[in-house]
Length: 204
Length: 252
Image 1 (cartoon, rainbow over the protein chains, first blue to last red):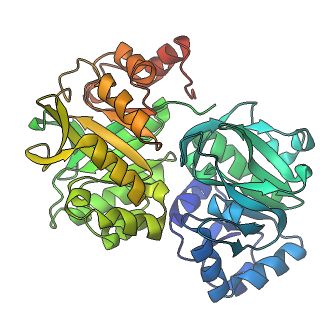
Image 2 (image 1 turned 45 degrees about the horizontal axis):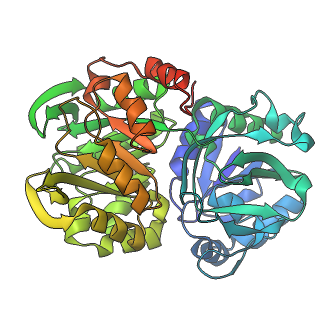
C-alpha cells in the first residue's frame, strides 16, 4: 500500500486515479503515523516551495519522512514534491528543504519561456540505463511538465533523466530508493503510467 | 525538445458538449467525459472543459464532470467558465483540474490573477483573452465577445503576465468558427511581447492551419473544437502530418 501525502498542495486525486488504473493500492493521508505501515511514499505537490515545506513541518511530516527513508522505504517526489527532496530552494526567497538529495532548486534562465509547460522528452543517464525505474521507457519518450524551477543536484550520479529546455536540466533524480520526477507521471499518458508502475515494483 | 500541443476544447452546457459558431447557433456534440477520454486516447496533449452556462444551478453538474474527467483521463486538463474567486479556483482544482482559465473575471478583477498565482502557483493560472480588431487595433472583449472593454490586447496580456498568469490563450473573435485559419499575425506579435506560452484559439479548419499557427504564428499550442468534434480532422492523422512537416510533436 502506497501512502500519498496530503499536505494541502492539491491534485492528489490524479495521482491516486492513475495508481488505481494500474491496480496499485494507495491511500491518501494527512497523518504522519500512517507512513509507517506503507510500502512506499509519494510526495506530490503543486504550488510554492516555502508554503509547502511550512505545511509539512506544521503537520509533523518532515521527521517521519526522513526516518522512513532512513529505514529504506521507497519515496517518490512529484513536481514540487521532487524539489522538496533537496537542501534548499530560491523560489520567492530562500527556503530549506528535506535535504534527502544534496542540491538546490533554481529558476530557468529568461532565454526560454517560463513556466516550462508541455510535453518534453526524457533521456536516461548512463547511471540508470539498466535500472528498474527505466524499464520500458524508450529514448526520447514524452512526459508532461509544468514548472518554473528545477533541481540542480550536487552529485551528477543522482541524475536519472535529463531534458532539453534552453539548457539540459535534470528532469528526474534518484538516490538509492529516493526518486524525484519534475514532470507529472500521473498526467503523462502511457509513459507516465509505466514510470508509476516501475515505482510500484520498487515498493514490493 | 518541447512539443507543440494540440488541444481539443469542449464547451459544456447542461452537462453536454456543444458547439456554436461565433458564439452563436449552438449544436449538441456529445458526452464530455467520453469525448475527453477519446481525445486523450487519440493523442490530444491536453483538453479544455469550458462551462458555458456557468450558472449557480448548473455548477454542481459541471464539477461532477470535472471529477469524472480527472478520474478517467490521464493527460492535463484546463477548466474555464464561471471562475471568479480564489475559492472557485480551489473547488475546481480540488475536483481534479490542472489549470484554470479566467477571462471576464480577470478583466473585472485583475487582482484575481495575483491572488490565484500566489496561492496555487502561476502554472495553473491561464489568462484567456477574447480579442477583436477594431480600426486596426486589437481590443479585449468580454461577455462572450459581446462587450468591448476598450483595452488593448498587448497591454492586457503584458499586465496579465506581470500579475502572474502562466499562459495566455488568444481567442480571435474575427476568425473563430469561420475555419479560415488562426490569426497568425496577431499571435506572432503577442508572442514577441510576452514570455509565457501562448495558446492559439479560433479559426482551425484544415491541417495546414495547424502547421501555419506553429510556423508563422509561433504559437506554443493550438486549440480547436469543431474540426475535432465533427471528425473533420482526426488528431492522430493531424499529428502525423505535423511530424512530416518537421514540427516537434508528441506521438503515442
